[in-house]
Image 1 (cartoon, helix red, strand yellow):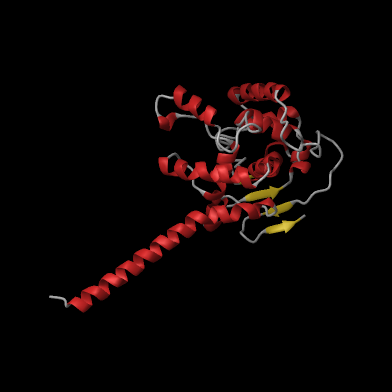
Image 2: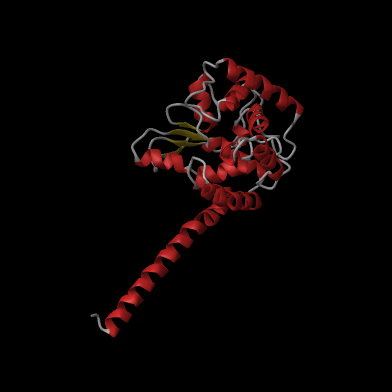
Length: 262
């Protein structure tokens, strides 16, 4: 039978271990909130990109600011993904209620995630659907919207979204894969096609669009004309074939240390 001092010592060790576990868990939860302000100036990478790098899977990403994109790109993506981007504060509660109401189950609800929520998921969380991920995603989205300006949130999204079947991340890599041209030269139709494949670029193609993708692109083109993104500073964005604008471009290849200025 263990002595009282031995039992007390073992209990203290257990308490210390539990305390360290709690501290580490809190640090993991706080890390995204600490990193978000840094992303005002530092080009971020997504958790999916990191996972692919760690597993030796190719990643192609060229980070470009909004000023180096065709104006049609952000406008088309907003029309497709988050029409109330300029009105909500990170979470579109109205859109979420509508998505849940129109779905048979919570898991089937679609269309309720804002671009800010998708940025939170892409940068800090994991793909898939679960209550836990949503519970972490909501406060992160509210924090991101509080800390970052709207145009920066959209710029990050356009540079971390998966946009091709072979590890193309960001609109620049996706544009070059689909149309053999930079994002600055995309037409309104091409930008709408890129927006139409966003839910699943591994199965949908902007390069060889099927009837469904073409139909969605037509819808997004019409929406983009009718709903200008009033909250974004798009005055520096380019129209297709417009003159070049100054701005930094970062090239990311297939390694964590592969960020090179062009």
